[in-house]
Amino acid sequence: MTNGFPPASPSRPARSPGGGADGRTALVTGGGSGIGRACARALADAGAFVHVVDLDAEAAKTVAGEVGGQAHAVDLADPEAVDGLPAAVDILVNNAGIQHVAPITEFPPETFVRIQQVMVTAPFLLMRRVLPHMYAGGWGRVVNVSSVHGLRASAYKSAYVAAKHALEGLSKVAALEGAPHGVTSNCVNPGYVRTPLVEGQLRDQAAAHGIAPEQVLSEVLLARTPVKRLIEPEEVAAAVVWLCGPDTGFVTGTSLSLDGGWTAN
Ligand code: NAD
Image (cartoon, rainbow, N blue to C red):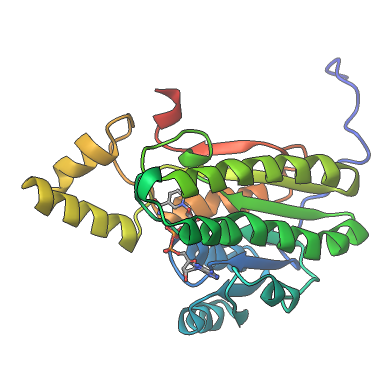
């Protein structure tokens, strides 16, 4: 008996027998800390061999050791350093990022440029480096760790918001160009993630305002966010692994908000 729908397409990809990334090679930038470390761990758990790229050599080594991968100590602001990274990569996670908070009138131009180099130029150069391998194999996944700030602005974050909006555009172009080759490109867009940086901000603002850290969280950082908690790095990594798995070949050029409803508000 038929259900009225055409039969499943013969080109529908088979599910891999083990984890969703079995046999794949991944490269995670900023893999030594926070979201990148969680992504490296989760991709390794899903079966991938992981190249852990980070400015912090010790952190990269520690995470690579933990996941049975390979560490690369690299400053992604240096275009030549990217040339030394592996090109035979099936899964690219552009995650490394930095922040600087100041009004535009006081924002150091050299800091603005460095933020664009790390968060826009390096992802472009890495795509340029690894896409030929993905195209040759007819399969690839690019995940760009963007932010709510890829979709919304906040005052005093000009370089970061500009970089994340640029990353959104770059990701969509990669989706269009990769489509005929079985390569998807997507962004994930977290709200505030529980990392040492954000926990430090909570403590500092609590001291500055003379209020409890929980109050800073719900009334300042999460003022527009209906779900009043930070997202954990592991929750972001789970979304990244899903985007790299066998069920997402049709998911491309998107931005997956993980923001507790912030952008819906
Ligand atoms: P993190 O500071 O914990 O980790 C970032 C890593 O990137 C660090 O290990 C750092 O050494 C590395 N890095 C920085 N500059 C580098 C460079 N020039 N070359 C190589 N490596 C470099 O930060 P995180 O919070 O895990 O952030 C990871 C990504 O997630 C960033 O792109 C950030 O914008 C994004 N994000 C973070 C949050 C948040 O609340 N923490 C929210 C939304 C998006």
